[in-house]
Length: 374
Image (cartoon, rainbow, N blue to C red; front, side, top):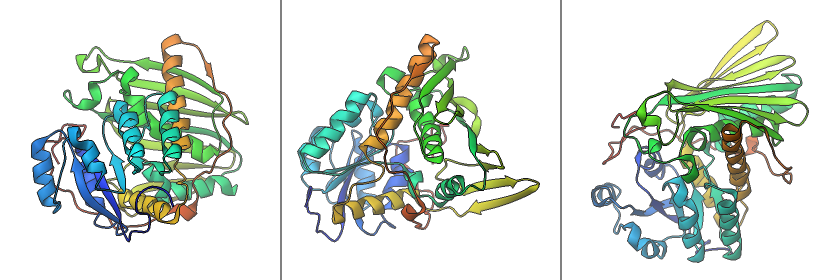
């Protein structure tokens, strides 16, 4: 058996980092993820630790300085720390024999991703990247449709993912060199969607970045537009933005039909499809579900049954290398070619997990990216 206490009835977790996402989506998910148990929290904010620890009935919570003590009490960690800290906290967990569920993007560079993968392998622990949409019915049905031939030959993918980020939000405080910016934060969803719908890896990247004169975009940048060439003369384009009205959409264009998902990437809203086949158009709404409880449930099953998670470290690496190529292309104005990757497992309908959605919890010292307190 790998890692700690795989035979336990429930996998004991520490959630590391208590920002907005952790509080509104991850912590409440443990209620439905019955194979997983929230045991402790790790945060640098004393008020967050105390109030949330009390709310969830936890006996002990820890500061970042006491991370190793927290690791000694759990089987797995869910890492929700800033992107540039993913490698460090993953390596320390692996060394302690603790399984790792890490938010995306996996890390800042390919080298960091490789180090995380190697540490997990050497210490016999599972490493999964939190691609929640790999268990979401709307996206899995889109994949099924894309591979069914109903759309004909797939030719193009396009996407827009943007929001108006508040002036003082943490997303605007780090440059791309430290894992900040709209491509690491939002573009990774568009990249991943194009890869799982085309069932392939891009071979060439072109990109351009732009920012208004608003000083809030000085460090992280405002928006990036990308063109990715895929084998079979297919193109994927997307724009991700920290300075737009809210949008979450992708369109898959085939020779016989068009699929549009809008919203496409959200976890707080029902996802929707519009399918156009010739003159016929149909619409489908997928009921809201707990995407985070689904990934917790899946990861617990991988740990208990000693299975390799499908959204593995290699899946995270595949996206990070594209993000890096995008920023290189935007900076140089030149196309960047990508080497082929080994063939890998892609999401399928077999991964769907439907668990009930929860309400909107009150948060402690955290705001949504738009600046609204939950």
